[in-house]
Image (cartoon, rainbow, N blue to C red; front, side, top):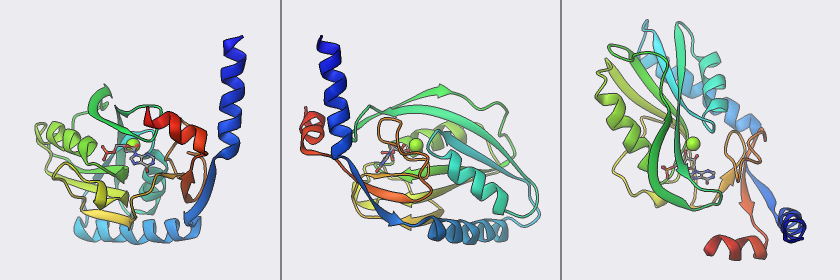
Length: 197
Ligand code: IMP
Ligand code: MG
């Protein structure tokens, strides 16, 4: 009955997890509104093609898209970079490509968080080869302390400290994405020990 024991262990760990609010839903919405205005100001009268990274960037994309005045289209890409825990593997792999060509388009990459920068570095290389007219990056959160790759975002929602955050698209093992705010996740001691392995 090893399976039953493992399931019980999982439930115990979840009970020890807690989330502390870092950025309220209201602040997120106000900031996105300001970013949308800024983006439109930089590219007046152009169709903006927003490209988001599944699944974390989806909430940011839908709110941003609705706040940008004028013509907007969007598409999605998916990459695998993180495992089941809070540690980055540092490896990025394309798991779903865009539906349409970005050649000649004004493309804004919309990401949930800029952490080590490995994902963004990979995407920017890939997209640059496809000859967009402009290529810009918008991230809701930026964790500059963790940066490994030499990349930067053109539009940043919030700069945050080196903490593992969840909510507003960001997950821990696929949970917490549906929170309307961003919070700092604290794991129970058992889960922490497990993640160090
Ligand atoms: P990178 O390390 O900049 O390549 O970030 C890769 C991905 O890791 C992000 O798009 C997120 O999906 C995930 N990630 C990085 N930091 C966090 C975090 O604090 N919470 C949840 N996911 C994160
Ligand atoms: Mg992501």
